[in-house]
Structure formats: C-alpha cells, structure tokens
Image 1 (cartoon, one colour):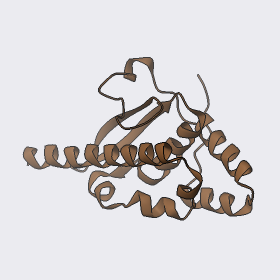
Image 2 (image 1 turned 180 degrees about the vertical axis):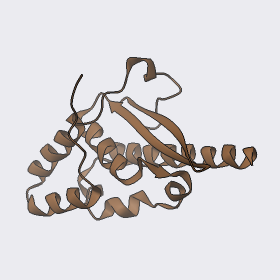
Image 3 (image 1 turned 45 degrees about the horizontal axis):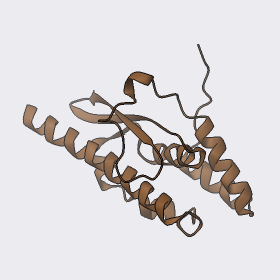
Length: 151
C-alpha cells in the first residue's frame, strides 16, 4: 500500500510559486507536484477518459459521489508529459472534491492567472490546459443534469 502526501492547496502552491523567483525552479516544482498525483489505474486509461486537444496524452477519470443529494466530483488523472502531470495536479487543487454546482462556477483559467503560467507555457500546453478545464466543467455539468433528472 503506497502512502500519499496530502496535496497542497492552491493557496499553498501560489505561496510556493511566489517564493521561487526563477521559472526553472517553478517548472521543477510543477513537475514535483505531478509526481505526487495519485496513480491512475490502467483500467482507467481508456479512450473515453482521454482528453482531446492536448499535445501530450492526458487521461482524466471522474468519480461521482452523492453528498446529501448533491453530486460531488473527485478526479484522477495522468499524462505522459511531466509538466502536464503537474498542471493536472494544480487543476485538481482547484476542482477535485468539490460539488458539481461549484465546479461549473469556477473560472480555473482566471485562478491560474495568479500563477502567471500562461506566459511561460507553449501555446499547445495552454490549449491542453484549456481542454482539461473544459473537460472537468463538462463532467460537472453532466453530473448536475443527471442529478436533476433523478429529482
């Protein structure tokens, strides 16, 4: 049984980013965050979980729980690119474990602007990040539709 360190919060990541003034150090930090991601089981590396629009291979798996009738989503993810795994880890600090109605309201790209990542990512990485955000929000919207049809 592996032991996982709890992921830092987005605010902790932001504070760490501010301490690291050099972008090389920030990239290493993002890669380190990706190394701490909970592993994605091979069974979840499916075509359905693959995120389209990413230059590297990215899988996002959504797990739905009901919290007093409200859908709550947690995510697992992986990529074949180290920096992208780190970006997934950062996205999960913003979205994972939250209620679906909260997720659809969060503007992750605006939140991520606080890290000033965009100006340091290639256009393909930025597009991939947008694709991951859209996928997560779509999963939350789908969970909301499903729960509404049950009531």
